[in-house]
Amino acid sequence: MRLRLAAALLCIASPALAATEAAGSLDGVTLIDRLDVADIAAGTTQRFWFRAGRSPIGQPWLVPVVVVKGAQPGPRLLLTAGIHGDELNGIAVLHRLANGIDPAKLAGTLTLVPGLNPPGLMQSTRQWTPDWSRSAPNLNREMPGKEGGSAIADFAGRLWSRLIRPNADTAVDLHTQSRGTAYMMYAFASTPRTRRMAELVAPDIIKMDKGDKGTVENTLTDDGVPAITLELGRPEMFDDVMIARGEAGLMNLMRELKMLPGKVTPPPASLTVANDIVAARATRPGWMRLLLPLGSPIKKDQPLAEVRDAFGTLVETVLAPQAGRINMITTDPRIAASDTIARIVWWSPDPACQNGC
Ligand SMILES: [Zn+2]
Image (cartoon, rainbow, N blue to C red):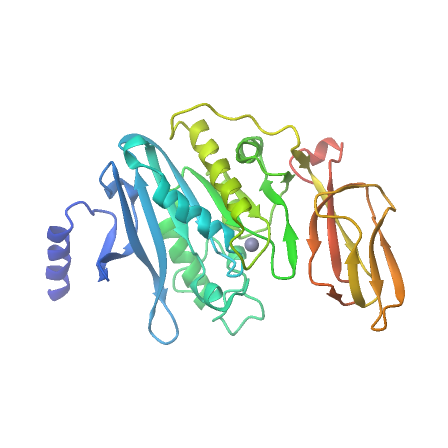
């Protein structure tokens, strides 16, 4: 009875909230247990703390959400970042969009989630750390999750069913490479539509890719919501060039979706589209130095890196296993035997590989 009264009072206090479940406020920001952007007043920007269940010490997991609700109706674009806690550039991109997109000039709804993995972000780790029953819990392999399941499944399930899936017609999940490695600006796509989305965001390289089970990108696309993963360079930093490119690319996608006015910029001529990838590995441990920069074209058997022992003696020259373009490098020179030192992408003409080998 008391609960029902509280619910009724909440409805009176927040008449705009229907399917959205409000649960109080924190420093003036509304706490929600569920979001339906249909409840947000047109022509406004609103900020929320989404409560994604509770941690083992009883405190809520709080995920920041910004909804920019256009004055005009239109599609719902969902942008997420920080599902891996050492991958930060996307968070800055979403902050810039939250402050830069004028809801009066927007058609449709932009939902921004700048920090999907609070425990990982706090510890600057790719993992979602508190699930001690698993060695390396990767939140981006857990979608759609399961409310009431294991700690990570419950967290993923709440994100998926109460925040992500109900508010997305189109989505982009922003990442970078992990600690000790670097990407260019690089997008993953899996269908003709998502390839087109990736082209409009104007990365250096697009990889057509069947994807991994449980990612935000692939779980959405499989459920009928076209989604891409966008990689913005290096981890553990705010890189102004990557952030500006990410913001510009996403605004171009929003023009194609007719959410923003203006002309759509075609993809750059320098864009590489690949559908296959191979890792170049050292066979000896030691100190590795790359001989070519990230993004270089490379021929098969071209020297790619040197490995030296503790005294500086050359012990191995690693050759490119395949012709293509270097899309990822290891930036930490300390390597173990069989560590990946770079990855090379290329286009396979096999018709079966059109959307990824
Ligand atoms: Zn990532």
